Each structure stands twice: as C-alpha cells, then as structure tokens.
Amino acid sequence: LRVLAGVVLVGTAAYWWQTRPANRLPRTTTGDLELEGEDREDRMPTIEPPDEVEEVTRIPAGELDDGPNLGWPAFEGDRRTDRPAPDDHRLPDITYPLEDPACSVTGGHVHRGGDVPDLDDVYLFGDFCDGLVRLAVRRADGSVETRTTDLVVPFLASFGEDGAGRSYVLSLAGNVYRIVAGPGG
Image 1 (tube, one colour):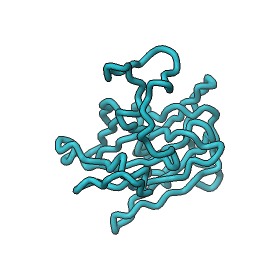
Image 2 (image 1 turned 180 degrees about the horizontal axis):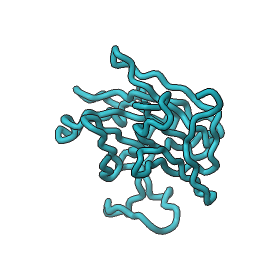
Image 3 (image 1 turned 90 degrees about the vertical axis):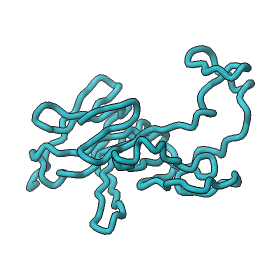
Image 4 (image 1 turned 60 degrees about the vertical axis):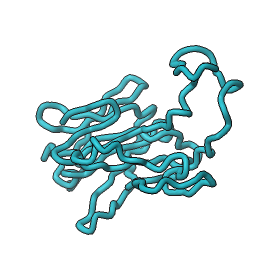
C-alpha cells in the first residue's frame, strides 16, 4: 500500500478520495491559493454548482499518468450541471447524496487482512459527519455495489491498516477502532 497525496495505490488499482476542484479552494484576488486565514467567500467567484453528492472514483494505476478528467464542473458526482461537458471524462464509481447529516466523504482503503474474510478486497470508506462506515465491492461486470454498515464512528477522519493488514478507523474524537468480524462472521 502506498499513499500519494489523495491517492491510495493497491496492487494495480488506485483510489482517489476527497478530491476537490481547484476553484473551491480559497484564493486571493491575484489567484494565489490561500490555505490559511479567515473565510474569503466575499472574494470567491460563484461559478460552482451546489454540493449535492459525494463521490469516489477508482482509477487503475496505469491511467494515473494520463491525468484523468473527473468531469468537474460539468458533473457533480454523477449529476449533470449546466456547465459544458468535457470530451472525455470518467464518472465516479460511488456516489451518495449529501443529505443531513452527511457532509464529506472520508476515503478509505481496501481491506486485505484476511482477519475478516467477508471484507477481503472490499473498499472501506465513510462520511466525516454521519460517521457511517460504508463498503464497496467491484462486481465481475465492473460495476460497484455499495452498502452502508451499522458501524458509526464519530468524526470519522481516516482509515488505515497495520503490518498484518488489519483495518482501522480513526476518529477525531480521539479513538482508533479496529474492524473485527461480528458474531458468526
């Protein structure tokens, strides 16, 4: 497992998470990125569509050098906006609506530990605000099936694994949780 600025490389697959369009980052009036400071909404252009969905896109490692176009701002997740569509773009594999209390996808990692066989090769991800741990499985036809678990981690901030491949979930409330098999699993 290698982590590169928002990309997790696992074998021959790569997962991007929490990508944000560049114009959503605060900028000064000269166009420089402003990573600290007070809210600069008064200087931000209003050219973005409203946040409606969160998304996760799987990009095979061999395609990372191509700089794949994820379709923004013509698409918000898999929803079309009124912006011109790019000629070639990749729609997300996973989307979910931003409905209260969901607010921001927290990506994830592919479980490969063997300690919870039902989760082997399953992508674990969640949402920072609702804390729900979600699962995604790639089917043989290439489509992705997602499920929401009953696991809730307050202020879900990150996922990780130890040297044995066991999966963990980090909470900004101060806890680290290990994913284990439930009764009968």
